[in-house]
Structure formats: structure tokens, C-alpha cells
Amino acid sequence: MSLVLYDYLPSGNGYKCRLVLKALGMPYELREMNIVAGASRTPEYLAMNPNGKIPLLVVPGRGPIAESHAIIAYLAEGSALIPADPYERALMWQWMCCEQYQLEPGVATVRFWLKSLKKSPADFGERYTERFQRGADALAVLERELKGRNWLVGDKVTLADIALFAYTHVADEAGYRFADYPAISAWIARLKALPWYAPINEP
Ligand SMILES: N[C@@H](CCC(=O)N[C@@H](CS)C(=O)NCC(=O)O)C(=O)O
Image 1 (cartoon, rainbow, N blue to C red):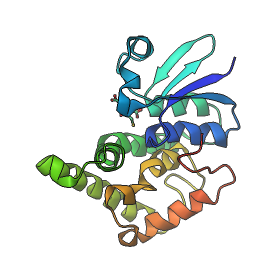
Image 2: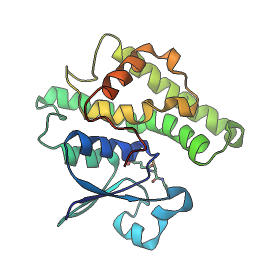
Image 3: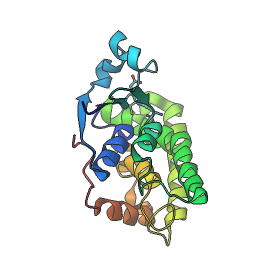
């Protein structure tokens, strides 16, 4: 019995989980869900995750865990991806909370509208402008904080880097230009050079 990950390959939230599983060399079974066709809203799936979202990790003998950051924190418990030092660990969570409140609702939402739903900015009007700006504000903070540093917390890659990398590295698919973000671009290249890196569409 292995870990089972319910996921949708273009999803950055799912990708965070896949990257952590790969970084830690943990075997898992992937169940691909066509969320655009409503696969995460069936009665069977809602019985596992009443919130109707992917990713969802099912832990053998225990049960399901929803929310990408809860999943990666569970997977990485005791590993070097979570700083042992309480202050650095708090900084890791600071970045991960910021991702969920600012970066993901901006960059990921716009990307989902354009890429998965194949809509145009005009289809969403002011909602598009507000979400795009929310993402731009988050990327500006990330750009400023990454200047002169290799990783977000301390001198090693942590869950914070993986969590923010997931949507940032595909921000061009939401209409942001990497040329505007040189420090982010260098950080993306650094993460892509790690031995366990795999592209977002790889199961
Ligand atoms: N905060 C959640 C967000 C999860 C989420 O928004 N999942 C999207 C895909 S990235 C989804 O399942 N959408 C399908 C739906 O709502 O029916 C996390 O980090 O896991």
C-alpha cells in the first residue's frame, strides 16, 4: 500500500506535492483527475475531500489530507526541507502563508482561467485586473526578497522554495514577463538544476 495522490497535472498545488515526493524519494501512486470536467465534485470524491479540490493525499492506514501545504508539511516532517531552527521554520511558514493568500489567488487563478478554461482577460473584466495585480504585487515582493540570496529561508532549499516555485515558474502562462524579474528567474534556474527537479506535467 503506497501513498496515493489525487492530482491534476497542470496544477501548481499538486505539483508542490509531486516535487516533495520526488525530492524525498517517496514512492506514490498518482490518480489523475480531470477537474475541468468536474472529477473532484463527484459524491465519491467529496466523501474524501468535502472541499472538492485537488491535491489530496491518501495515507495508507490513516486517511486523506487536503491542502497542498498540509500535505507537503506531512510528507517532509523530519527532513531537511523543513528547517530545524524554530525561527527559520517560522520564516518558511511566513512564505507559505503568503503564497496561499497572495501569490496563488493571483497567479494561479489567472493562469487557470487562461490555460485550463481557455478564456481571455475580457471574459473576466475587473476580476481579471484585480487578480492579475494581486499576483504582480506578490511577485514584486518575491523579486525584492530574492535579490542577493539563493533560497528563501537560510542557505538551503526548503518547502518555502518548493511552494512558491510551483506557480511562479509558470507565471508567464498567466501573462507575467520573466524579463521583469531577474532575481526570480535566477532562483527558478537554481531550483531546476536540483537533481530531483521534474517538470510540472510529469507524473
Ligand atoms: N488551497 C488549496 C487550493 C486547492 C485548489 O484550488 N485546487 C484546484 C486546482 S489547483 C481545484 O481542485 N479546483 C477544482 C475545483 O474547485 O473543482 C491547496 O493549496 O491545495
